[in-house]
Amino acid sequence: MPKLTHVQLKVPYLILIGDMGDATYAKTGFGIVQWRPDLVAGQLRFPGSEIDMGVPDMTVQEAVEAGVKSLIIGVAPIGGVVPDSWWTIIEDAARAGLDIVCGLHFKLAEFPAVVAAAKSSGARLIDVRNPPVNLPVGTGIKRSGKRVLMVGTDCAIGKKYSALALNEAMRNTGMSSTFRATGQTGIMLAGEGIPIDAVVADFISGAAELISPDNDDDHWDVIEGQGSLFHPGYSGVSLGLLHGSQPDAFVLCHDATRTAISGWEHYPLPSVQECIDQHVLAGSRTNPDIRCVGISVNTSQLPADERSDYLAGLSEETGLPCVDPLIDGCGAIVEHIKQLYPKR
Image (cartoon, rainbow, N blue to C red; front, top):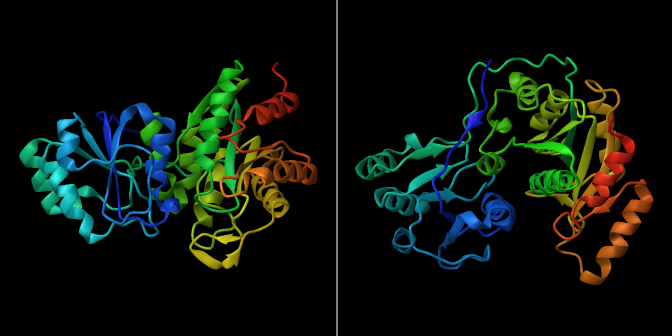
């Protein structure tokens, strides 16, 4: 049986965000800073960068002097590549002895100068987006235990944050739960998982089954979502993950101010209700009892005095608890789950 992808990173980290201009594509860096700030020493930004993760700015040399052990490429741009201008800095970091950690679609071994720099210092080159070999095709066979999957109206909309916040809230109330990572940042945080979007399409559902195996009846796997069923580029990975996860429940993740698919502005976002209905329809193929248990909303771009009314209105419209997980936590969704699935 194939094993999950495991990573063991040396700390503390320096997170490279370079001259990335859109915070949406720096989600790896922001996710690590949000959930493991104790492991982050600083950020490496180029002149003119408009993104600030709220940690100290450092050069490679300053990071070495501060005891940093790993440089994490903290971006996930469209297409999964970084600009050519970044590689000199990455080589410098490897030559200085920092492990280079990459979660993008290329492999660090493809860059001879980086390989040579790492070899000269003994630094490691760590590719996180490296799925196991010999993954099975999905069986669709029901597994014991319970599962809740994060889904979204779009990509980069809070699925990882919501999963981590929900898992934390569940555990704080004494529930048995495990965060299951399906993306590069989640794997960096959890130490294991499978990068679902790097899996050959035929084996996505099988990989999802492997991520969330049989468990105790009252145990919940909180599964990080990927992509969106409504995304013209990334819907395939979302459907495979939905079918293989066989979730009993899902949490819909949404951005209160986003009106179109990010980077595909000619595609309007679906309505919240349409998104719920389509996930129930598609998910019922492998779990006829699937249901939506809450809505996780990024309200960061809403005026503060509109936030409460927006969430209350959405809750009234859908009949579901609606929260911003970074402001409200996920306690309301946890209580709703407890009502729907009482402990045996």
